[in-house]
Length: 359
Ligand SMILES: Cc1ncc(COP(=O)(O)O)c(C=O)c1O
Image (cartoon, rainbow, N blue to C red; front, side, top):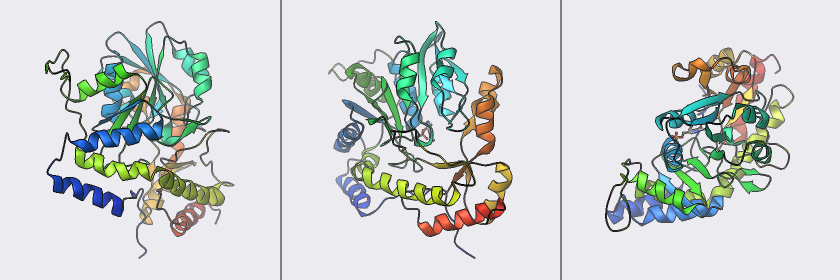
């Protein structure tokens, strides 16, 4: 029996082990110096003035929206095909998540569709660089009125670039995730990136109970405990230092898949002039559910792409979204990581092509 192929395999090595051991030995497991060090590394990688480390990507979305003052009475435009946290964060602020359809080929929104969804109540648009593929930022900014805030869900897009500019630095705030399926991991973790010091300060307050860091220890607005522990920040520092190496490993694995599958199934790519972050390698296939079950039965851990929000109970009342529906039904995430080997890609592709009758 051949070994199973995992969907994802975080690339953590000696440097990460040493960094974690150092913190464990220091006795300062949280609220210590590693938080700031990690934040500097993340801000440096994204090119923003600030990065605020938080407990996970969902917390980053939630706090970014709260820091921007999004609340009851506001509408926020959200792609109908995304990880549900993008819309949940909007709802948890008391605002309305207005779904907009996606392009079933790229899995991301078209700027015109977003512009059509904007009303006088729209406060923000969640621009999701899904699976690490940058949205067409210039087109989006050009058609959406300046009074509407563009917030990036860059959960899977650390290192991705839109026309040379890093994802996470494009909007008023960027929200990153460091979940083990992401490009850089801390196990669980996230960050809000921004050039606006007031947004950064508000996120810092909200992640730590709402306490104002001015010596008064006052809590003018209640907050959360959404902090990221030092031990996890320490893990993230060498990960961010290795960002280019991690991206190169993902680019290599993506090119192996594209070589083998490109003539048969729809494979992902970035728009001309953009850099894909390759958070996941998600192909478009007919009979997705059948292929998913067959590959899993062969020990190949595949997964659906992500969720079509209009199919979920919480977001079911907004009508039909044919692009998101098609994306949902056809998207198949293949095993993918910076450490994926060519042999593994061969095995996955042989199995997939065989099931498609193209061996
Ligand atoms: C597009 C997107 N947004 C948000 C999140 C939430 O991140 P986290 O799992 O770190 O809370 C994810 C995680 O999968 C995601 O893919």
